[in-house]
Image (tube, rainbow, N blue to C red; front, side, top):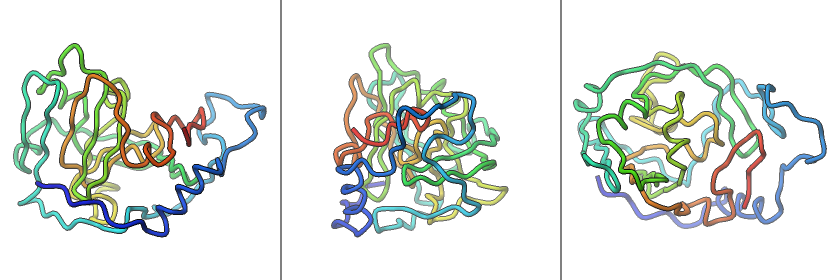
Amino acid sequence: MDEEPLPPDSKLTRSKRRWADEHKFLTDPAAPRSDAQRLPPGQHLVEGWPVLDLGRQPDIGRDRWRLKVDGMVERPVTLDWAAFMALPQSRRRTDIHCVTTWSRYDNDWKGVATRDMLDDVVPRAEASHVLLHAYDGYTTNVPLADFAAPDAMLVHDWQGRPLTRDHGGPVRLVIPHLYFWKSAKWINRIEFLGADKAGFWEVNGYHMRGDPWAEERYS
């Protein structure tokens, strides 16, 4: 389950670093907003599901896929596919919001609610954040409270079908109330930490949390 080294800078990576430097896409902070709005500020709706990655899409079959859960937990574990599927399976319908300004409504997911996984591993009292690792070498950080949100899931199905490789299959994280760069594709490790630690995009100018309604796009 070794992570691959990150690929050389892609055109998208260079562009997104520039966007962070320029604070591109940010709307007027004085514009009226409502927390009840379904579409966060600065976003536009799409019908498809755009594919964004670091230039590599790991080909990890279910027979080889593993998920390591470790760090500040009472019961660290490494799950293979059978063990993952033996966990309680849930369904959710949620919206998703990408920092590149697209949003997609009504995505139907099936997978393991993060709260059900937390019941098995039991984070220690001092755990406050989670660092997510992916097979392509990608990392991103989230507060434990966001990781444990009611609609956060480790998903293997989308719209009634197995999650495809280009969208992070066989398993990706989905935390729909944060910008989608926080929902790591091709996930292979969940590391519980006692302090926040920046991941790939956070080091490159993106926000440490990423709340779409607060437009937390950049640091």
